Image (cartoon, rainbow, N blue to C red):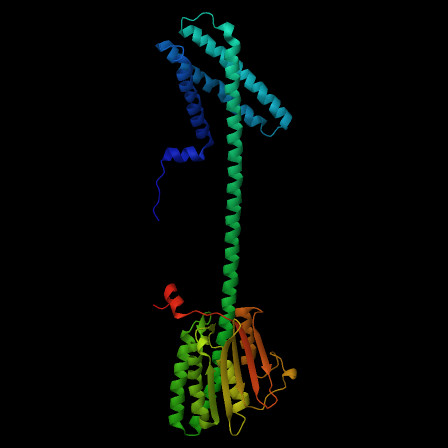
Length: 386
């Protein structure tokens, strides 16, 4: 942004009330000289040096006579309105009398005119009109400056209030991010403990090849988990890909005992959800539905759009639970409670998370989230695709 250089004198004129008063005094009174020259001096064909000099001198006298009015009006500013109005009129009349007398005296002194005092009433009337205009301009400018000061004070207050709100918002955001990171990172030790137990079992069972494969798959999954920001949302397509990294580990562990089914609506691929949302749900299903069953079982993941929301269902063919006897705090595993806490942090109350126990056995985790879709085109506009 280009910076505009302001003349120092103009800057002082804008900020300093004394400089403003001096400037307006000079401009105002010598503008009156021009008006007097064109309307009186030229009109009466009085173009000699003495008459022109008197036209200028009366403006100098006007500056001198009106100067104390500023202090008088400043003193009267907070007085009762009636007293203020009365003393303003008295001040205007007094200054008009003084200026008229000085104008006539200097006019007689500088010119050959002799019979001028007889027209004192005309000179006084003009003086009164000029000083009334002076008083009106002074009060008008004073009220305008007062209005500007109040406006600037309101703007400063609004700016300070906005800054305070921004600070509070940033503090709340930092606190929320810390909470989300804590919740997300709770999953890693929990998941890692289960996986290492499985690898240990393979090693004990002398399945070195499977153990090595699982270690490599675990490495890939943990790399994705640690590199992915727990605060940012990912697309459902990315989330399913991450889930498959995890399921590769479990397929190595359970082989044919674990059957998987994915049914994700094409329109839902770009919907953004919290990262690693599905992994603890699937891990919970494996721990409580697949692992205890001799023949294993099936886990199905369904996702579709419905009336501005994303519907996700994670189903298993395990023994199921009595949902009336379980809550998120007492239900099976830390994964479900952790997921609910994360959803609350991301969406507030604008989400649905339910455990459903079908009559035919098994358990279904039903999630309904508000739609947050960001297509490849909008990514390109935001510069996120680079």
